[in-house]
Length: 317
Image (cartoon, rainbow, N blue to C red; front, side, top):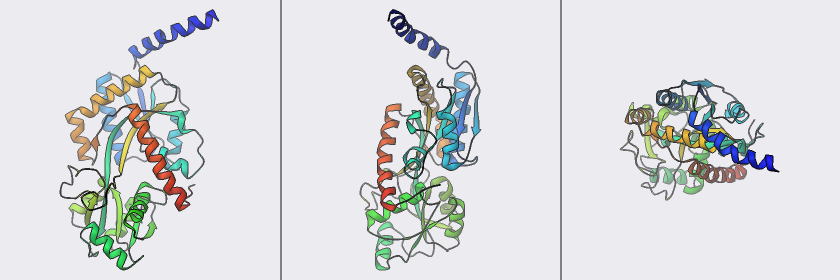
């Protein structure tokens, strides 16, 4: 018992000393989705600035596939020392586990911080006569199931947001799943489908080019890169609010001191004016909240989407 007591007393000292020296070698950011998207952009901007701050390389490794599960599994089973971190969107925690079996438990990953948040746009092709959300709802109610809604695939966030809108507005669209938002936007601009909820970085360029019409944005307040687009709240949709955030997670069991040090450094990154501007240019707002706040976000969103997924009977791969 005495040996155990001595070890318990020494552990905090050892961990604190380890945290004080952290990081003493390169940190790896694992991106579980393909290069080129907003997650990859935000992760690489963060990696570059964090590397400057901690005087250690921060390398990015894309481990894609299975709706983010492959990258998530790699980090969940990595050494809990703060040197292997997951940069991901919330769907890996709040959507995918409700649709399919996972090779790891979500509890094997612990939150560090949310880097950024990005709302979604409700967009229509130019042939749709509705120019506001209320006009779209009236049109949909006058001709049930006459409007088709593109989405990035069954069970994706754009799909679930569209289903949530239907439920709250009391309308029904014909849901048309695509393999990603790129093909969906092609058919939307071509007039083959009428509307879509999509992320700002992919949808806004089409709006600015005059190929699509933006009816509303899903953030609580208007967004800096699309100041003329009203919010869902302004459009009469009550508390309708959805954001697609990008967060950093570490293997469970990573010492608290390491998590807090990473959180502080990441906070400095996202509060940097240079990084803030680059985030906004990519269609995202900097956040930098606490591990506890991230955990609360995951719980709330998992409950919301899980309930909707069960109602719709959605299943994944």
